[in-house]
Image (cartoon, rainbow, N blue to C red; front, top):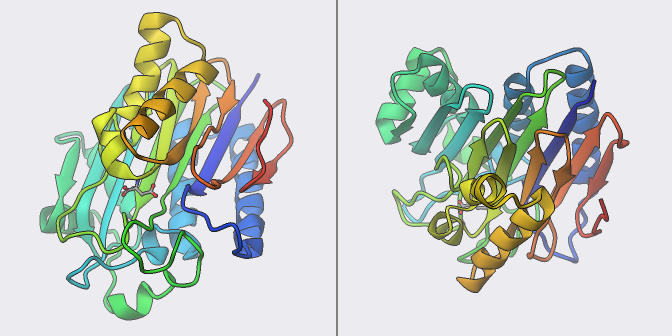
Length: 294
Ligand code: ASP
């Protein structure tokens, strides 16, 4: 029986930054994910756990590592999708959560809505027992330190995400971000949009990272599935064509994807992409600037 897992810590990466901590963290986390999948944990639960750990680390632009918008508020985006049922949940522009992915998961599990935003999403998360941040300035203090592409400049960005195929062949995807640095209050990127930043069905699971506006304009995550489903394109070709279209609109970034046969791919057209993968056939591996030939 086979399984596969990819996690990412975002496409924003600076060539001269020392990512030793991120590499160590990604390595530990992918091994934890491998154990979970080998123990028979469902893909959607593994994705939830991977993204939660990435958020809590403060090492990427998501959860604790997020940066405030121009009004000084940290607004978070996240989404999760279970490919076996197409159940999905998302929160957008939601302030001061510890685990946006868990809020997205609560929306999914509740089932009444797929996407919630702002204070309403926060209130829903609190009502579901999730934690909020009491002292945002102290909690979200890591964003200048983790090398996610140019510090405080406009356009710097990062994200975290995970895609998994479990022992039953089910797929899931999840993505979480603090968004682009110096974004306007209320700005929502691709990350919480099912079909743009995140997608999972019974064919493919995708989590994107990069300049969100162009991933929205290309419906990037679902575009991969559509190319495979309607044109019979392979995972590799579909993901590269999708990213080429993002690039044509002026956006850079990358994505991680697993198809229903457990094939994996992690293309990007940014300088680097923090990522790690493992499968029943492939040893756990961490990469940032190195390319793989899978
Ligand atoms: N896609 C994210 C956003 O635009 C940022 C990133 O992935 O780096 O909010």
